[in-house]
Amino acid sequence: MIELPELLAPGGTLDAFKTAILYGADAIYAGLPGFSMRARAKITVDEVKQGIDFAHEHGKKVYLAFNLFAHDRDYANMPRVSEVLNYLRPDALIVSDAGVIMWLRENHPDIPIHISTQANICSASTVKFWQNAGAVQCVLAREVSHPEFVNIREQCPDIKLEIFVHGAMCISYSGRCLLSAFLTGRSANLGECTHPC
Image 1 (cartoon, rainbow, N blue to C red):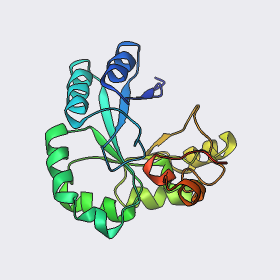
Image 2: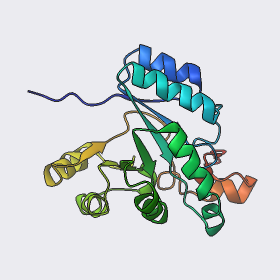
Image 3: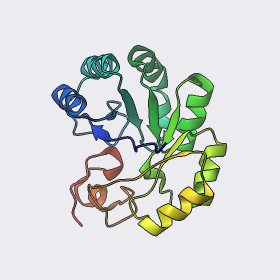
């Protein structure tokens, strides 16, 4: 039996959540407000909760992007993040920062971790590294070609892999560009890229 790929769609608003579910998405990803690349998403924590409940009622999953690269100042907010995660109860978290992963393993070991495209996974060796760190799924870098994807799948048969089928292609490695922050004060890492490239 062939397992079909999971169709994952963004949920930047509550309407987008519901529309994607009703039109066939298997799962939704949404940003954890203030802690993800989804800075421009117009969705509140309560709306994310409504979206998660709606998805679960329809047998679908929701993955929360928690993919900022954390500075020490961000860890001061982690107790609030714990409260939000306990309230939302997502199916998984999409993470890029190794320190955040360590914090999650210590504080929320029950939530599965997906490694974000922000981690720039371009090889089977890197997939294996993250798998050993506890990840159940890796989102490959947008720069990975189809032949490279096939090779990674062959070398890593026992972990879920995710690939982009459309979307922005950064001139730098997947959102790590500093050009926007330098020119405008808007950080690509916080989802505010002005695309000066």
